[in-house]
Length: 447
Image: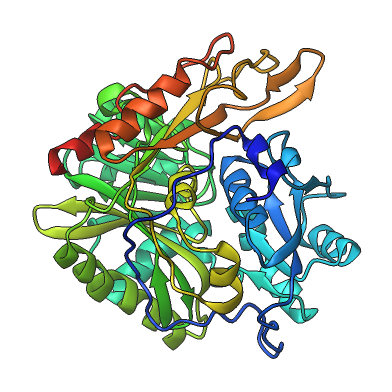
């Protein structure tokens, strides 16, 4: 690891003792028609985004032997300690293309979903630049909940029963169609907060009034345990990443409104070998094959949000990028050189130690958030601290968003990883902070 990379507030991770390879014979095509990289050439990487996921990506790329420099746009104060941060002139694809050319980026990794849906991958490829991600047409899997649900149904991917309604007013007579609780989803992008689980008809009506205008997906509520399953894909070829479990609800015991994610953990016991193979056979392969059939072959990270029900895995949603905070624990646990994975399609290998990430949120999150509170303790807490919503201000490091920090640590077993993470959390402080105290607890029954 480069010396300056330690400024992400972490001790170096221990070397792997045993590893698991998930190789599926993939060689990622980042831009059709472009010659592959020379094996020992070092290049410049550009990371688009400025949250905790992008901090984790930049942190890992900064440790790679394949990159001479990492640039992030817009980045954040945490990323600035390990990479060069440059604010783009706008958040539109042409501005990112302009910046990539300006800094000489030879590989771009897109963190958030909005640029993907806006066509940043299409633009880069038209101009012959290498970029990891799906085209705008493929990104509709996340950009439109209605498109995604219709795709699942015509592909035969197991998912919840659902109907798609054009307006909130038209949805009211259909709210009880699948009983209660019922799941309501806004059609477009909503930063992880466009999904409401309503317990009864009155709650559902109130939720409809708060969802953004447009199509509504009314969906059967599924019971079980959630799993985030992410693959790096190139058409029908793919390589799975280690499964993770996110915690969406804001409060302990999955209570309260949904958020972008309050924490996650990653270990080798979330899924059995049989469950892993079933997910590949009935979700991943059919979905990637159908994308090819429909003329929109999928490249980049494909995230299947799953519910492990009594009837088997069912897809809750597709995302077309790495998850947040799943990325933090995946990257923290990854033993491979991420540069080799992205440039050459090298096998991803994993440290045996589980990793846990606890999100520290600002006062008011996931509602109206207060910003500008001073943050203390990140440098000496003994864990990796990924910045999500921070800025440098009059008070030094300050809160600047709802999800502020992702405190991440590992241990020889899940109990130790949880304990190490919460020990570090207690050393970090900002006024109004709140966090869940049960991240990873569901996984203890598998140890």
